[in-house]
Length: 303
Image 1 (spheres, rainbow, N blue to C red):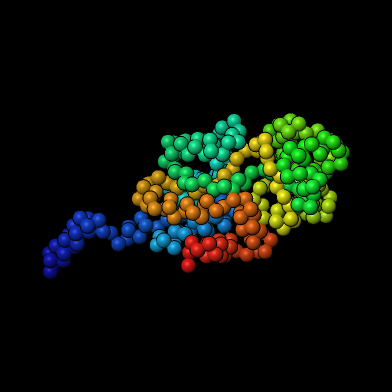
Image 2 (cartoon, rainbow, N blue to C red):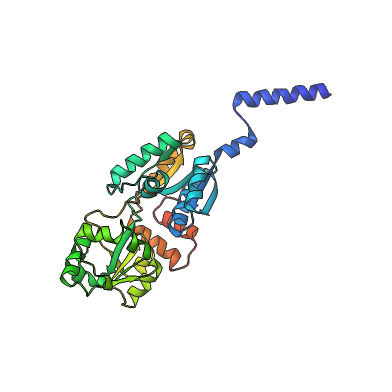
């Protein structure tokens, strides 16, 4: 009897090896782990990627809410399979480049090439959204200040002590911050016009009419809350931070359809769309997964 049992086990093992069948390992191999960093935009987009994969038959686990370096290391080391990253972060932080590239296409191609060659990480399609530093004004002030930083600079130069500008300490002190911005735009900013504060406080100050211009990030959910307008960086001063899903090459090689699954959604994520999605979480208090699910259902990407 024991001999017959051993023969049966051997036959099953051989059949499994020939057929490529392994009930335990197949599930693990087909599961995709989606990562995300620990701020609102990352949670929302990370949940979108997870929901899209689930809709298309993948088993998904999530590894969200970690710091930038930990999230990145998880992907490189194989602890996660895909997560949304920013071109500027990779270029300046992960690859340690000092040159600030403001051409989004050039930056994307350079980061894409370097990460594939050095880490076997593939950058999928680039979203239009650019979560970079920005200057914002109240929409009601566009007739006075214009809609671009160049127009604001003209107004400031004509009224050097009138415009109150809120920025944080780091941007004030960094040589590639306010001093370089003022030089780039020929803007004569008086020190007495500057208010140094945390970025989060600038919105409240704008709402109370204590500031005229606030430093912000281009996709912040509080921009629509306070009815602000992000001024066009028409001389391309600020670094580019386009969002892209990044994925391990071995995972994409096995499931090339993932690029097609993500593409139409990623192409819809511009600054204004992301502002509204972040607004739903940060201002209206909705869970990130709910916001992601509602958006994907409204756009017809999931049922």
